[in-house]
Length: 248
Image: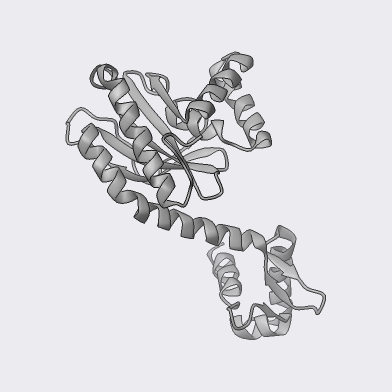
C-alpha cells in the first residue's frame, strides 16, 4: 500500500511549470520504473480523474489536483489572515474561539484559541464532524450549493428526527442573518455562536465560532453575537469580500 502511494506521489512530482505535460516514457524515466508498470499507474490516475491524457499522447495534472492544491493554499492563507482577529475575539469574549471550514459535508476545525477558564469546551485543530446539528454545522450548511444542501438536510433530518420543512426554514433564517446561536443542541450544556465568513467571490466556506458553557454564555448572547459577527466580517474583508456588517 505504501509503495503504491509513494509511486503515485512520485508521478505527481514529475510535473513542473517548465514541464506541465509529459509522455509516458518520460514519466517512467523520472520515477525509474518500467514503462509497463508506469502505464498501469498512470492509467489508474487518468481513470480516477487526477491525470489527463492529451491529444499529443502526453499527460498533465487535472483540474482536480489543482483544486486540491488551491484548497491547501486558501486554508493556509485564511489561518494567517484570521489569526489576529481570532485572538482579539478570544480576548474580548474570554471563551474558546474556532475557525472552521466546510469539506465534503463535514465541518473541519482549522484553528483554535482556547479560553483561559478551566470550564471549557474542547475542540482540536483537524477535528472533523459531519454537518448535522449545532451552530457551526448549520451556518456552513446554510450556505451550501443547492444539491449539496439537499443531501446535507436529508442526512441531518434522518439523524435528528426534525421536520424537514422546519429545518429548511431555520437554515434560510441563518443564511439571511449570517449567524446562528444554539444552546445544548450538539453537546448538552454547551452554547455556540457562529458567524459566516465570505470570500471575494461571495462564497461561504468558513465560519467563526465562540463556544462555552451555556450558564456562562446565555446571559451574554447579544454581546457575543456582535463580537462574532464583527470578527467574521473582518476576516471576510481580509479575504477580499465586500461586506457591510454580517456577511449574507
